[in-house]
Length: 521
Image (cartoon, rainbow, N blue to C red; front, side, top):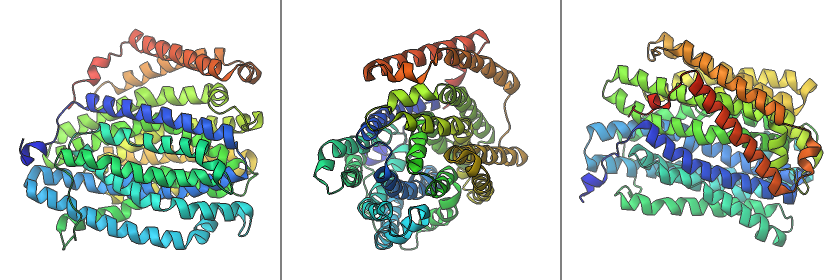
């Protein structure tokens, strides 16, 4: 097989691609749950864990800005355009030059970050205090975890290339290496560290190396592994960097809002940062498995349609994405909110994770779960702009959403503590989602298809059914905590499975047919 044949994009339906990404991401998220269960049981929600979550969230947050966020949204549309209009040689040269530019930027940022760790901790967790034990421990761990930014961003670029060429499985399964590394570090490395929680920081660094190396053979196999080189004024590279700068803020507004929550939470009682972390992990499950999966698959397709001037197909693709997300996002939010206590008790309520931690995490989970549909929809609505290489519009909207979140945090932190911070993020998500949708409609970029009112009514009916069922079987916290760990999980999965069956039966009863989601490609 020639290089040209190997580099042809792999064509398949959006449903098939999304299903593949969702399955792989589901496996990774299940490993992530196993990781968090191990961490919660060994370390609980004490001061050392607050320090670790800040040290881990900062490079992870910047990774989403550089990699999954701004870089991917700027790089994929330009790469898709090169696929359509340039030769194979030009595409490979473009990839190499972008890799060279990105590596240079990341090296500088990582070096500066490692030098300025005390200042960064003070900015992102001012409530820790300048010389407190939490602040000093967080600073030490941030120096260990910061190189993860560079490694995982390069991994994300490799994944973006594979995604653009239709190979979605490998990038989706790669995060499982992070979960495996942190579990092994918690079990076998932490006991040898002067402070056990520092072992988790080393686990993050090891995971970054493993994830980057894991991608390389798959790029090589598909003739997509290109040596990084100097940009030399490449117009495509300049366009990516120009698009990337504003997107550093706009595309990751949800993460920025969560970071604002962490800053406010650092002033609250010990454990607040950890409670918000576990809340974020639970809401991130449906968002990652389905929301990010659909957005990942949809962006290359939208970019190609824009390059081909396919306006009608562009709207149909957005229509498919939004309906698919609501089909999953609404019941996910309902389930997380109503069944919050059993979920937390079954996943984290062991060892040093006390009954107080269960109740406190439940409060913030109920609040943040209400925003799950909005967080999902933002991923697709923003892609409607990014595929057209319009970064400025989502940035402006994101700025307003972040302002709303900050104001709400300042208002709700006093009566609701950490749960108020979670509720602020949820409400800001709807502001972000609503403004994106209004502008897509006003500019006639998106023209909704027929049947939306009927579809919403059908969804409301099916979701009412599962809400009644989950409320009925929730029970008391003592019922759940009295069960052995295995039986808690069995009971949780059983009720979840029944709820899914009830939901699917309800949708079928009111006429929703899943065949209508298959054909788009």
